Length: 412
Image 1 (tube, rainbow, N blue to C red):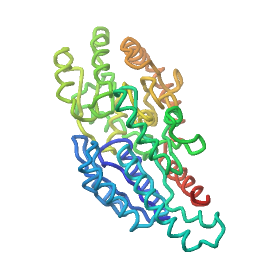
Image 2 (cartoon, one colour; image 1 turned 180 degrees about the horizontal axis):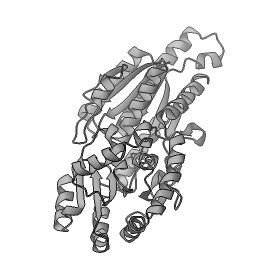
Image 3 (cartoon, helix red, strand yellow; image 1 turned 120 degrees about the vertical axis):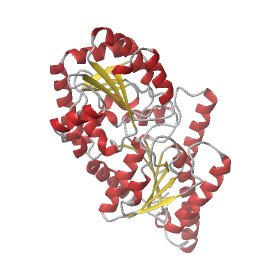
Image 4 (cartoon, rainbow, N blue to C red; image 1 turned 180 degrees about the vertical axis):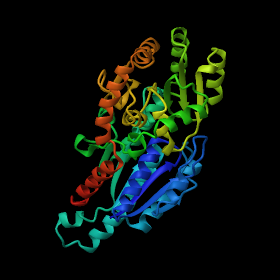
């Protein structure tokens, strides 16, 4: 197959890692893969070097930017349309909000033009045969939704309207969680039969295989973490709605009763300075470590050097850090948002609590701090489940089944 993936930017992030693994898997399987992406602007790091070294074609489109700006968006649409027409792919697979909307619009315009040309050449054939000219097939992965309850009403309505417009030409949706499917359907986006849940895959060996006690001790020394400390990690961009402030608030109470706890923030972003000031003002500097940006291949070792994962985000599709921690055998505490419950089964693989509930967050952390046996039980159960469901090869195989199903179905 000829497959084109489109994503807004290749920063360090779950949607971006998912897209690269999808491209790499399809390339290894012998498909002709092209990845179109915008520039990796922002403080979150970049994955462009990995993309360019993976053997498939990568096109950087300078006009494809995250922020809405007609000065960039209009030429990005026309350039996408031109590229898709030149490549004549079987599948156009879009990711993220901006690339998802512009990419699907562009692919639909190319398909419409091709179908008109095809039908005019074969006007005497049956309608079903003419419909088979409906290429490229258009697939969109929902990693997280562009609309959410934390937006103003008018912004929310605009995003829903844009998504509905792009949906008219979408053949299939891949949701990283059932929760994404349900939210789309509730907003009038798509039909249930168009959606397939495919968990966001990852290179499981980085997480399942422990780096060993010596390496774990070395990591703790690297970040000045005492060997006997209980380490509570949070892996997320330092950004709005990621919830780091709730962890800091809970730490103020926990540290009164548990002096040997260290919170380990892994990631970077625009809110780093603000969070550092909040930590200092709360007198918690010796109990917090901010690791900054880390390459994806280091995350597994850092989680093995931790004891618990806390994920306090208020908005996610299905956060990759949850299965990553569980594959490391580490129990997780998560706010019950979006797809979290599809991985964090309460009291079986971790603890689910209501969003923004600092009291419950405090109590849940204290429970696991005090009970290493419970930590082990939850982590072991999560590891067994996630190792089977979140491996990158499993994801690639499931996505390819979606592609083949579409190509075997007459076009629209």
